[in-house]
Amino acid sequence: MATTTVTRAVTTRETKGRAPHGAPRRGGWRTVLGIVFTAVMLFPVYWMVNVSLTRDQDMRKSPPNLIPIDGTLHGYATVLGQQLPFLGTSLVVGLGTVVLTLALSAPAAYSLAKLRPRGGGAMSFVLLIAQMIPAIIMAMGFYTIYVQLGVLDTVWGLILADSTIAVPFGVLIFTAFMRGIPDELLNAARIDGASTWRTFTSVVMPVSRNSIVTVSLFSFLWAWSDFLFANTLDGGGDAKPITLGIYAYIGNNNQEWNSIMATAVVASIPAAVLLVLAQRYVAAGVTAGAVKD
Image (tube, rainbow, N blue to C red; front, side, top):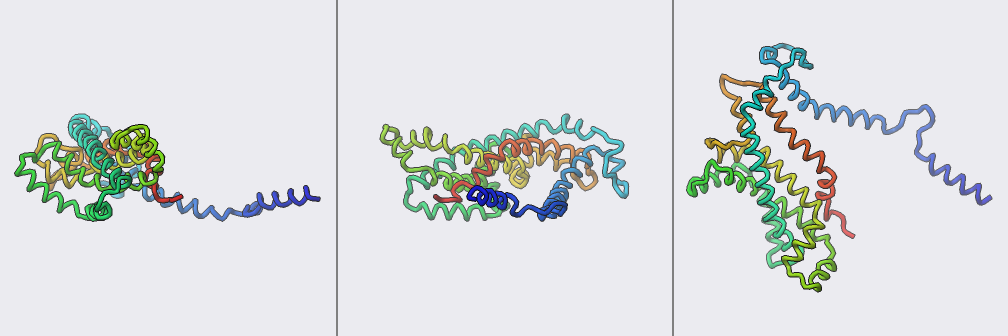
């Protein structure tokens, strides 16, 4: 009798919420709605690829072709011939921004999270306020300073400017994560004779991998896609980033959409690859500190 009761309970639990045979599942409309929304959001990406393969004379057709029937690789040939130096500059600026952001934000976050200096709360509030300042205001301030220092139209100037956007974000992410590191782990390192800096480099940073990947990824993407700082602080330099390389194709009497979209496709590949590879770490790093034990 007891066995029969348990069997019925398990069967009821397994079949509970299951749709009757032949009846549509309740979540079917959600799946369809998700597919529609995804298609709408991805359509600009498809159109970018479509235009990058479309000939210039076919751009004026009405309605335009949804599929590049007479496709061309002229735009991609232009990218390889003209845009590679700009891609290299963006890569240098992006990696430099990542290095500078990690070097400044990680120690600052460790101090706020574990050393708890005086004024730490006010500093965190200031970092939040710093993220609300419009980039155009910061760009004008940087322009005046760079002219006086003679660092206008330089790669290092762009790295410093882009880091001002990434560092406050990095400090907030690192602080949220490092607050969740058990104090017993740090105390054990101190008992073994480790200094504050050694504890930070040998204990805190290795366990902060998710946050490091998250901050690095967002810092690189901000620097890679930056146009405002680049146009303001490096508009006349030889080492221009890829955003200015794309902008060079746009003019009053010249709009090379084929080359523009081909360059955009090539410039999107590094960002897309990084997002795919790091999405697991980003999800863990962004939610760090959100749940308390």
